[in-house]
Image 1 (cartoon, rainbow, N blue to C red):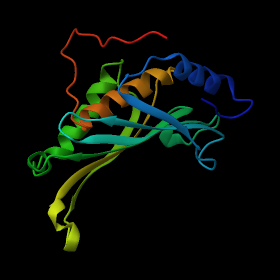
Image 2 (image 1 turned 120 degrees about the vertical axis):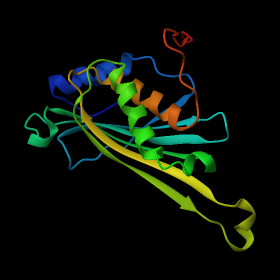
Image 3 (image 1 turned 60 degrees about the vertical axis):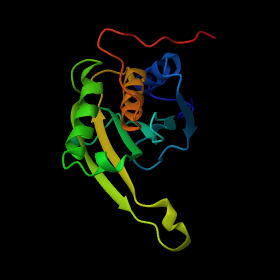
Image 4 (image 1 turned 30 degrees about the horizontal axis):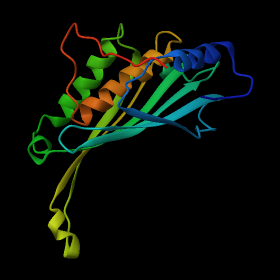
Length: 187
């Protein structure tokens, strides 16, 4: 995964942590063009994970680095994510859906250490109805979570792995029980 040709040392360390991290085997991850106007250094990936009930989740993870960051970042690295999934109608009708989704994100981030600084975001629920020849599809409920945070260290690989766990949960993949580790195939 790339970035700038001559990245700052802290951003280079963050990139190395992503290159050496082990990610979920059920996640399809692809590097995409990173935003160029938000920070001098950036890396962006998109991911897709299939769920167990026909849902799937997809989104993007952007790592930004600015040696002279905006004060609101509360650090020189910033992660910006977009996560989307279709959910079952029953779950989509739950008035606590947004709070539950945000709690899932906080839990996966808390599992890797102290919560990052300046965690913020929005959760949006969407309802789509089909008409005409598409009427047989019925209604669909979706959820979209936009979040950003400042990692306390340059270990961005850990944050990408945590975000992938969140994406899986959003897509209906049950989390592993406490104390159980996911097995990874070695190349």
